[in-house]
Length: 156
Image (tube, rainbow, N blue to C red; front, side, top):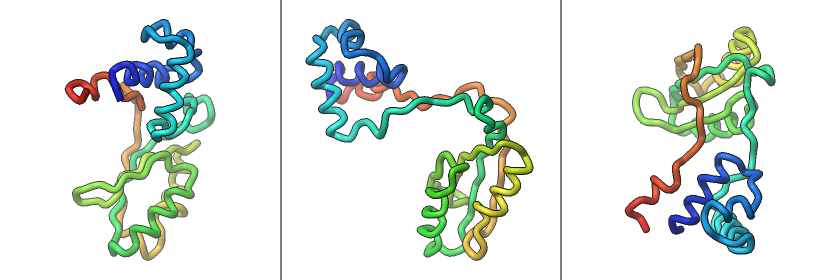
């Protein structure tokens, strides 16, 4: 992947609906060359998907929380991971180091619903030892943007 590919990735992260011609104007390539590069990046698995980012409050996901989870027995980690992949309220599930095994990012429409999710979906009986929940009051930065040009410096 060269610098032009990384510039294309940055453009697409900001607006995946950009046309090949407008991308080409920025990076100095023809429409066909841009399409070919995007197709190759997609074939290499660089894109996980094409998506949009929703305003969570406007769709009723008013509560944002991070939950640290400790699993009692390591053999139960697979069960927990499977359950988290199938729980819609869980946006992210990360296996981490430290006093806890997992860090979850989840959303809920209300505090009452958050309590229900924690009780019914997260605290799996016999698997989860303890949890610690942090409620988000506000977010000063909430981005999935990875500056591909910056990440690639020195790697060309």
